[in-house]
Image 1 (cartoon, rainbow, N blue to C red):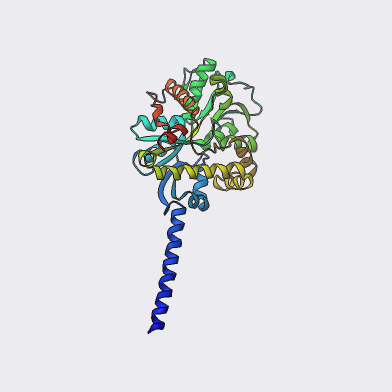
Image 2: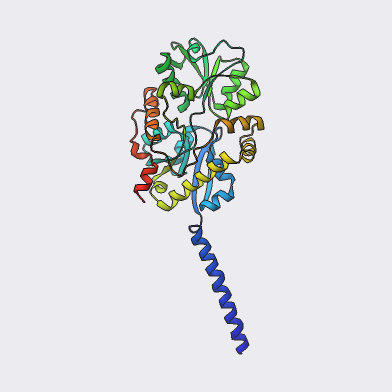
Amino acid sequence: MNRTWAVVAVLLVVVIVIGGYILASRQASGGAPLKVVGATIKSGISSIDVVAASEDIQREAGLNLTLLRLNTPPQVVDSILKGDAQIIVVPVELAAVTMERGGDVYIIAVDYGLNQAILARPDSNISTPADLKGKKVAAVVGSGTYALFKAFMKELYNLSVGEGEGYDVQVVNLPPPAVVDALVKGDVDAAVIWEPLVSEAVVEYGMKVVATYKDLWSQYAGDQPDPMLVWVASSSVAKNKTLLERVLKAHELAAEKWNNDSNWTISFLAREYNIDEKVAEKVWERDPILAGSCIPDNYVDSMVKIWELAKEAGYINEIPSSDRIITCSTLSSTG
């Protein structure tokens, strides 16, 4: 009998020790993983794809991420407005559209700067954006990239841009992959598109870069930062301190992975976006990700300036409140 009790006592000690170890492990990692659903466009690069691809990042951040990969920017916006996703990754001007459509959302992180470009065929006589007058340009008309193109052309070159006759620059509206195809085939004189399609056009088809959006931004805004792609979160994330911290941690870890492990990132880009490794290497060189754990305060003015361009192009009606941008100082003031 005494022997039986001794065995029971030993088993109880073992159970207590194991239970304590599990509890301590959970406390060290901040508790059980929190579930969150994200959404992004299939034909664009973002660090949320890295989070989705890396169980290690999710584990370290304490997240369980489900990622929706959608075909068009409006579908991405709809996903957060309808509650299907709590985080979307979109250009900063599309974040403004989301707010304008009634989304209770906040910008919580920046991926990278403007990576779009104006492309032309290598044998073209188009050497500057001013040469686009009288030309046909392929673009995704529903995108913020197109809105900024319209605004840049008007602000910097006094050229009107639109579909059909009567514009200085005539636009042909196409879905993202078809933009480059139309340029390669000679159906249009130039194209406006984002990564990884810019690098694919340059590396695989020898298309020339007439101007990058960074070039245009520098002409327009000087030395201000040029935020392009941002993480937008619903209030259920932005106002939940624990969940927000974990999401920002995942972003930071993904950015560090992207920036510091070139071999992994190039292989990931080639596999994830179905592009050649040489194209992937070009993308990696062009697009370092902002690796901080929060948005630097000096990015706010830049976002507002981009919203001003978007408003000028008719993409949005009003400029959102900058209170919807959660910066480093915002986080520090809320503890």
